[in-house]
Length: 488
Image 1: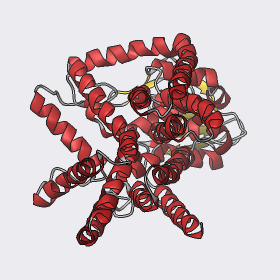
Image 2: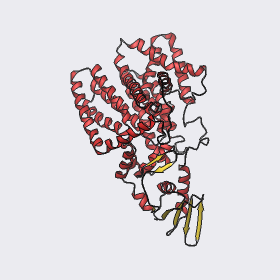
Image 3: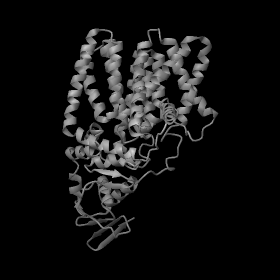
Image 4: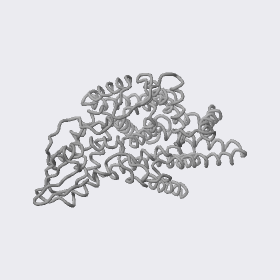
């Protein structure tokens, strides 16, 4: 008991440090900027610069911009962007009511669920396999560079990843372990809906659950229970579809058509996928990152290809040794979501003919399963033969070193080497305004985008008038009684 508590405590401390370190040292990415705008009730796109998708007056008051931030406007802005991640946007809306709109506050919401994913992965893996596998998996989950990166980003992926893992944990308790079924039935329904509200792509994990229950259920009652749960879950989800989901889906269809015609969407310009070899190549590169190798693939060498083969060799060893053992069913519970991911990605690529479905963000949902599978492979090597113990631990160290080398935006990179976008300028400008404006001041901005983005960060009880003045070279000019203050 003490040893388990110590392991969990160390994983928790390491996960917190790795996910909170540098969390506020980087500017917002383009997609995080979209999150911030929609969180405040404004529909915008990046194509490639930030553009408002609704008409607003040239002159607004601070209170008028702040009053735009209501859950109805947040929902409408999200629907205007395909309706995807509605659950995340609304949850973040209430979170920001408590903790504000700063970069750190918004990203901490993701960091919390990134940390919870490590702890849940440890306990789930321990139930599926054993303590040693769980410990290895916990370390891999803690250090996985892509999971860390998305835990430091104000986007939906960390939240969706946690709830995908939670739904799989719950369905295992219902269909196999038969533990606390009364608790896990409602938990599964709630978690499944939250994951779908966070990202539609998580649907493929739900489909994997259907196959898992159908093939590996330990009692017929589980089939009936799961059928009722599935119907009830999608009954709840259909309420959202009928109240904005289908409307947003039209945007998804338009975006897919734009990709098919090689047109940039929100500043993203994916490459064409024109052959089976392109698809296979992209999938292999994806799986290298899914298993934790986030090193620069442009500087390929023999070491890179060795690391590419490592996870596949471990997975082959797993299936070779457990196909007729008591571990086969648990292995399938972490493998099926990955198989359905491959199927879904191939279908999306065929439909869009672009590489955008291969974006690593869509693979974050299966990374906990990949870490658990890799950890079990190492455990089987250790247990199989005394001669493999030292090589197995050596390989574990190699994988850990690869993950540490690939941390992004973690420990091994200078936080000043990359300024991604614009939000630091707006935060600094809002701080300047909060300390320099007085009642009766009027603020002049170069553009409407500058005006609303700066105002998002402002925390003042005053109600200055904000005016768009396209003739000004300075970003902001404050005009009041007897003064003129410029902020560049």
